[in-house]
Amino acid sequence: MIVHSVVLEEQASYIKHDKLFKELIHTFFEEFLEVFFPDAHKEIDFSSIQPISEEVHSDLIKGNTRRLDIVIETKLKKEDAVVIVHVEPQNSKQEDFNSRMFQYYSLLYNTYRKPILPIAVFSYPQDWEKREFMISFSSFEVLRFQYKTLHLKKKNWREFVHSNNPAAAALLSKMGYDEKEKVSVKLEFLRMMANMELDEARQRLLYGFFETYLKLTEEEEEQLMGEIKQSPEAEKLLELPVSYEERGIRKGIEQGVVKVAKEMLRKGMEIELIVELTGLSSEAIKELSKKI
Image (cartoon, rainbow, N blue to C red; front, side, top):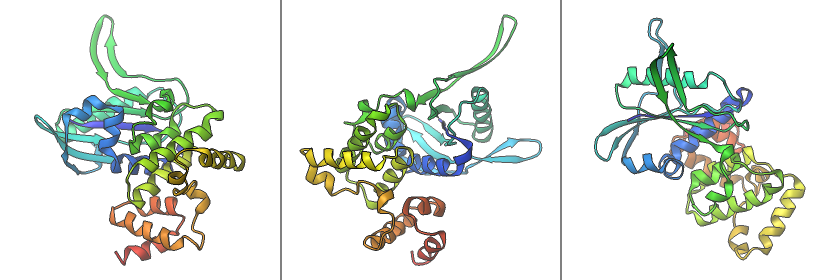
């Protein structure tokens, strides 16, 4: 079985969004399926997952290739399977998206000759969604191709705050909420973080993802701090960094940031993403990689 998951974001920020979604789903692949696609999660044996080639031929005659962001091989609990998650961050609806999904499906099947479960994850604000691609003429239906979808903006963030699921925690920032709810969303995100036992590298990934998409003003940060102090969980919440972006790499925590960067390198995260999440320069990251 192949899982093909596409996340839509704006082209102008393609690289940043692409890497964030790729690393999030790569790192929390099982948790991502568990919270958003529980039926598929029940069928997969996660003890056997491993990356495979990320290149799929897009032009069989000329030999051009397209690089898929995440390609994971695994087994179903009852049979062998290949699972492919394709993360393509964009934030604009595309009228031909359903035909591209069919094209990706066809190319993947031609490459792997395995059953495929396609999943599309939409993160754009418009209420536009297609779940199938059809080819027909007159009264004859030639093809009906269907795929699963997750439209984040259509999800109520409050439904996920008790899940203690790291993928759901990060993606709260892309779900449907009003501007007046931003402080509440971040407060619940922090509560989820406080209840999850994650290493510093994974914490940094979740904070970096969340704060890329949900940014608070100074006034909202002050409001958040006031609500934290009044919370029964204040002591636990105050141990968390309220904003990694604000902390940056100030002298007082630079040593900790370097430690986190090293841990990210050990986990195989891309240098560009580590730069984005830590604020360290690419040169500094490359020097650290020589010491790993």
